[in-house]
Amino acid sequence: TKLLEGKRVVIMGVANKRSIAWAIAQSLHNHGAELAFTYQGERLERRVRELVEAEMPGSPMFECDVTSDEQVRSAFDRIGEVWGRIDGLVHCIAFAKAEDLEVPFVETSRDGYALAQDISSYSLVACARAAKSLMTEGGSILTMTYMGSERVIPNYNVMGVAKAALEASVRYLAYDLGPSGIRVNAISAGPIRTLAAKGVKNFNSMLHIVEERSPLRKTTDPAEVADTALFLISPLSRGITGEVIHVDGGYNIMG
Ligand code: 0WD
Image (cartoon, rainbow, N blue to C red; front, side, top):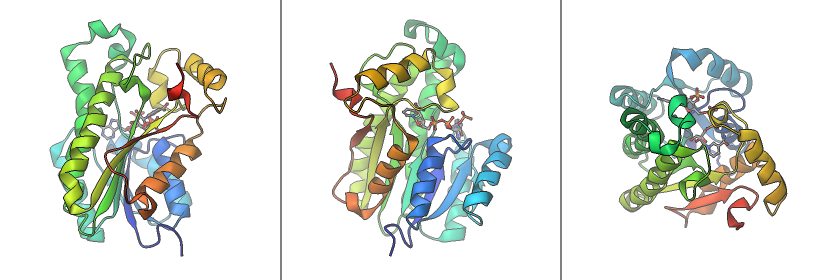
């Protein structure tokens, strides 16, 4: 039998076929998981539906803009109605306004700071709370972060601060949910060219630096992230929680 046979996993944050969430969905699907998808607003519905219907037909899809408590509640209520129980949650959501990524960090607006925190960090807390009541046989929650949380990566700015809060949230959630058999972890991925990456200035030079300086001398492939996600969602990682695992060709160890 396959590693995730009989497991039901909710995937949040597919925007297009380049999305890290989509690479993760493919890996989990190949290992037997049943998947449900949430998407942000009608804008993305058609695109996500095309991808899902082409490769994983019949997977349920639900609208969920994570800035809305109401949408988070109703999405997980509906997942509960369809499935009863879930075993995994994959959170691949982040956002900062372009104007807040383009200015020096010291110029970050109050609104821009709050919005980046709301969508990129608080949303994990809200979704973990909603998922908890459906994880009646334990579960695994996974989110995506980046090294800009640990050190200054020029241009990552307000998002780096949001990722620091996200990683701290992973630890506090792991402590709260551990007694329910629910694990919470993050993958810290090296730079990958996606829609979200378009907002980061000099993204190309970030890719080149990783290629030149990382121990593996290559950029991060979404499939590498996806296979680590498979491990973290599966029982193979049953002893791991509150952890941030770097999938970056080893770049983070370099001085
Ligand atoms: O180099 C990279 N691409 C890295 C990304 C390196 C390390 C980490 N990450 C993280 C991102 O910060 C994010 O947390 O991985 C996660 C997934 O990002 P991605 O796959 O790089 O980007 P993308 O395909 O754009 O997916 C992010 C999606 C949004 O896409 P757009 O581009 O339309 O904003 O997050 C979703 C949306 O689908 N999203 C929301 N979903 C629900 N409610 C919301 C929202 N309010 N806002 C954004």
